[in-house]
Each structure stands twice: as structure tokens, then as C-alpha cells.
Length: 215
Image (cartoon, rainbow, N blue to C red; front, side):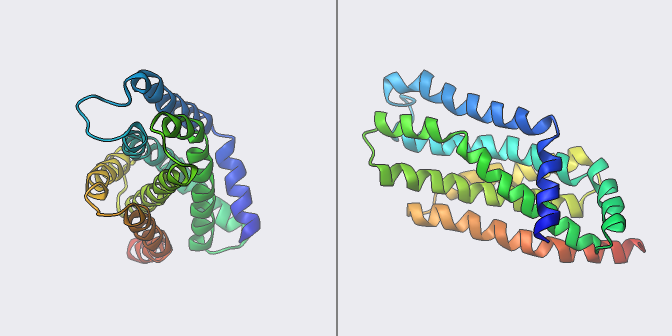
């Protein structure tokens, strides 16, 4: 399982979409701090720059992480999934689980490239290192949700555009909902738990779909 997940991570890393997503994410978070840092944040938004960046980062994950996950889990990826399963002599659900594991692992890198922007926003906001770590944790939790939602959509839907649009819409709604939670701990754990539950359920969903399709 670990060897298959490492193989999938290498395959994802070789695709052009992977560096594109990293560059876009780093540029978006850095630009937000550069533009709004001198004023301490968006003037009409009653929150610190660090809090604003965390909220904006959820929007970036809703668009970029779902885009990456869609490219990895649908269309040509689905055909290669069957080929790789046959070649490795493993059930399709096992290979799909390994691919999801690789995607979640690379999501950590997706969040890591934004860490300098979080540190800069924290310094401008006079936040403690613990506060900065907590806000990065909230972004990590939301990245798990984005991966879980996209994985579920990739099994439930056939069309790549439909998968991305559905996953992005769900994540955008979730981004608004997360802000209504009363504590930072809940804002971090709630999306992470929901995402992990969906990720755990996806292989079973895939097996059910294959049975329904007669594969």
C-alpha cells in the first residue's frame, strides 16, 4: 500500500498541474499579504490580517485543490487506474485508496508553500507563533475536506467539469459555514473530520459503482 501510494505521489508530481497549483497558491497568498498588509487587512473586513488570510486561503483551496484532485482522480486518471490495478494485481479500490493517500500527502505541500505568507500576516497582526500555527492548522483541516469532497464527487459523477464545479461549490459553501463555528479548534477539526470520513468511504463507493456498472 505504501509503495503504491509513493508511486502515485511520484506520478502526480510529474504532471504539469502540480507545480502550477503550487505557484498559484503561493502567489495568491503572498499577493494578499503584500496588497493588504500595509493597511492591516481589508478595511471593510472586521478581522486581523491573519484571520483574513486564513479565510482567503480556504477559497484558494476550494478552487485549486479541487482542481488538482479532479485532474488526478477523473478521466484519463480513471482509465489509468484500471490499467495500473491490473498491472499491479491489486483491487481497483486499493489503488484508488493509495491515490487518495498520495493526494492528501501532497496537500500538505500545498499548505506548506503558503506558510511564509501566514508568518508574515501573523507578524503584521502581532500574533504569537501559536496563533500562526493554529491558523495554518485550520487551512490543513480544510484541505482534507477539499480532497474528500472531490474524491466523493469523482466517484458519484462522470464528467470532469461537473466533478470540479460540484466539489468547488461544496467547498465554497463549507468555507462560509466554517467561519460560523465558535472556536478555532472547531474550525480546524470539523472540516478535517468530515474530509477524512469521506475519504474513508470513497473506496466503498467506488466498489459499489463498479458493481452497478457491471465491471
